[in-house]
Length: 140
Image (cartoon, rainbow, N blue to C red; front, side, top):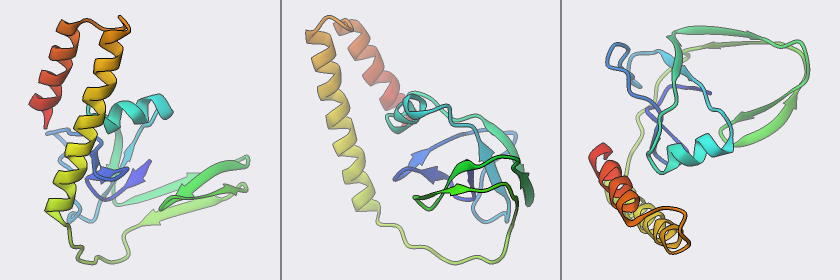
């Protein structure tokens, strides 16, 4: 995944590396690894991070076969090609903090309901449930 903003999938913080801080103002982008839908779900609930593979101001991707691609949520099949990614310009964006807080609350509610169901089914213990909630609260 190539991005130049600190979040993905509706506000998920993908990575945190103090030695290579991420900023949308540094004219650099980050290349992070996603390992499939399970990893993306773990990112969504905050129990894992995506490893940063690279950070830079220019990237060249050469493909030899047709590959599935996606830009801003729009998928297509990319024929073999060379893609060059560079900084073009910058625009100011607005962020609604109240909406983001509501989304986070909804996600926490859903996660708590899922964990209660798992506890009732014997998949996790009450202690594990409490530990996961504490860990999520610590990482916020």
